[in-house]
Amino acid sequence: MTQGDRRPQAFERGQRLTAAALNSLVNAVVSILDRRRGPGTQQPLNMLGVLQSDLYAAVDWKSDPSTAVVRIARKNTAGNYELTTQEETVTNRFENISIDAGALIGIEWIDGEWQPYKADCSPQSESIPGGSAVDSLLENQPPGGPSPP
Image (cartoon, rainbow, N blue to C red; front, side, top):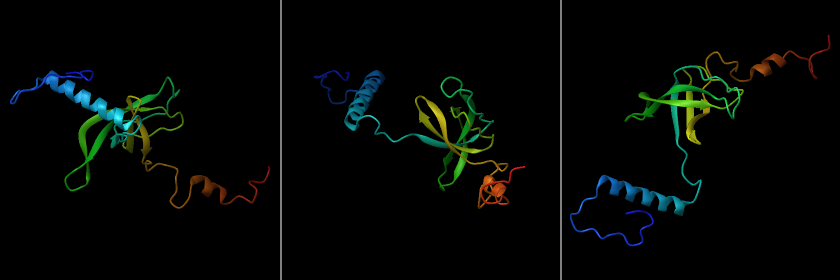
């Protein structure tokens, strides 16, 4: 049976589908559901994990991204996250963002590859609780910026 069949053969009671026929049926049903829902209505696929190595900034986002391996975390029966043995390759197309190994990272499936969409800052980050590093640098400056030399 294929999606194009308008009059598929009738099944008899007790008849079993072969693996190929079952796969064909699944593909036909998925195709019909996709057409009814319309393009772009599926929920995105996102996961959390821990980077196993540094994920460097891309040299060129279109043609020279960087990659690293992320170990996937899943919730256990108690509702807490734990690392699994599943690993995925994440592709970084950002030219100004690098993420350190060991960082918690959120990845999503975009155009056939896992890409980062959020990440936890490393402890060596320049952010300061209650303000940014830039704010702390500017605290001692006179209004209008630093005085000319």
